[in-house]
Image: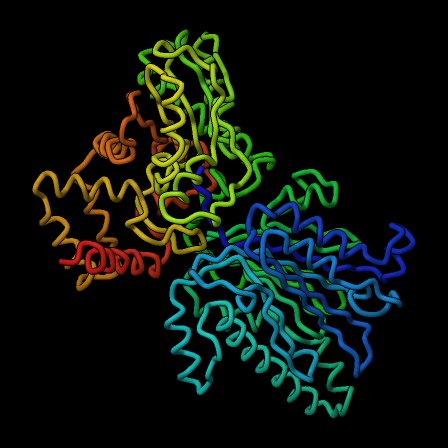
Length: 584
């Protein structure tokens, strides 16, 4: 319902045959480009702020460009980029003659926007092996420490940001690897281009990755190309961000989601493999690939929000997990409607909650009830609210959703409506509750297939501020109403001065039950003049883990951050909230 921004989507392709092979078999010199385009479009859900692509042409002679990059801003960036890429006169030249391709889709979660922040980032050098192109799906929580590490070595990065600083750190380590091989080549008596050939054949990207990624705290899938033909992707040791890969005798490919690879290359789910935590997929200049453990795997914390919301629901396992998330809510829903299924209409907020809706209604049917299903809510095209200001803009924004009039019997039917998550609550208050009330339901049961979102995310999801979360605002309001302000004061002091290995913000929720916070959320989000009573039903933490057993990362619900940086930033966010919002 409330669009969450997510950083980001990646796609990589390494062609393992000569260009003539693809021209003869597939009838086009743009085979690699066409596949990259499909993989990016299939991940458009992951990033609509901007996009970028890059390639490396291994056959380009000295004096001609061999690394190409294009970037664009906006939701139509992919189309714009691929229109911009020329059809080369010679199959051996430019983009069409390339063997390595990389694409990226971006949503910013740092507040920084503009073409300079769109991936891939490119570091140039006259030595092919020292050229580095980097993109990723990541958010680093300790960029201050990494910046200090770089500057202590005498470097002076031009831009302060995790992507650019990572490019410089990894580029520095790549330089060291090339120089190590240069010394080896000289010791073996090689000269001139013989040294260059030796370096390009012997580069060990694992050395570069191990001496780079050990400095980071965060969730990431980091992808890169070198000018000499190395391709790599590495996943964080907690497995927070996802990556999948496939290889046959024609290609090696990697993407953020499994069905993207399945659809693009017509594969079964079993053909596509998940990159494991701390692991890297590395393809060398000659096209030989291998997996290598770059960092020891930590306790698995794969992001559960990927399963609830972000990743494509067409994935075999995600589809079943989302259905289970809906079905598990059946007992709580039955209690909320007092088992009166005959006078209840079931619906969902389009579009990402549809699969959970099917699970929910299956659960009711298994109790031997006929289920009345209606498409009560419709999502209209995005209204151009920029033409208005102030209250006019708010009024237009309230009409992003519309309803099916006559879809229930006024004052007699309950309305059960499911969404995948309730984060800020803004859309509920400004739009959804207002338009649903026009149908005059006897009762509205608002269902969330995820638990209460209580804590910010620092690994790539756009919810980094505590005050934006309706569950947090409800807990603060309850503390204030009940004269428990000392809990806020004590938490502030611990967050500011106490050990940063403990998430002290969890104390804010400790005095209250889920039901108490639910009631307060309803009170706060209920628009003035609304007549129908509202009840909230959230997924439980236990239900989440039962539905998604292989993705235990639940820090936005429980406050159990997998990395020290997440804990530290959550405590820092509470200090900022008290000092800037409550102003003690």
